[in-house]
Image (cartoon, rainbow, N blue to C red):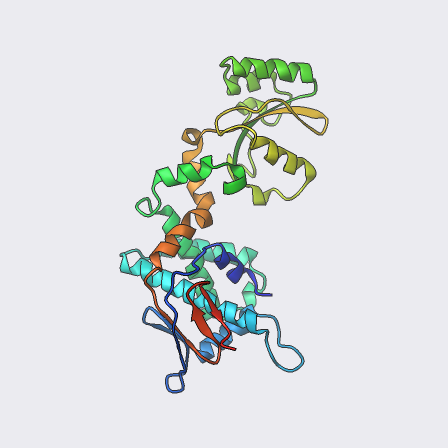
Length: 303
């Protein structure tokens, strides 16, 4: 199976945005060409060696895996060239941040060749560039993505109150329904000593907003996330039992957490823009590897 890069690229959803082409490169020795940039067969073999599993006993690599890696190169290259055409260039700071993150999370990073690292860094940094650009991704888009709910955004900005007694929890819920202030009521009444002093704000490693994917997996977490979705953003839930406590949860309004959210939604925000930016790109693939299928955005077998 392909490692992290192609999996990340799948979330960009570039399918059907790059014009297809097919030719045999017997003279120029290129595996692929897109937006005027070429990937030589030697360079492609380096990528395959880094990102694909070891060959089988016959010295062969899985064809779908190899074509997936070539598809990844086409997508990244088309995207970066499209950004350049709009006068947008990746900064050194964005590259450095991407490299730091990848070196900590990417299996086998230390053994990758420089060209493979560069490709992964460019892709990761390009997502940050897109998501941080308010012309490409207006604040209204970020707000709509957040307010679509934690299930869609995977971003949690939460206030909570906890009670060991349901009657007390219901009493506080009634006060909230009558217009009571969540933070004030949490400070005075919540039995969760870690969040009550801050008005019920839940933090993860010091962050007021965080990705749900950083929380691990548990039945109680699943219940919490499902419960948060029972009320619109900015409105408290009814008391919900999780374990031995009754919780009142509030997904905080966007106005409270707007500065925290954009960096957490990089992939979600960048995907539709990346698709738009690459809509006019053209790819040509050496026929020994397959051809570009514009309907799926993938290199496919010609046989």
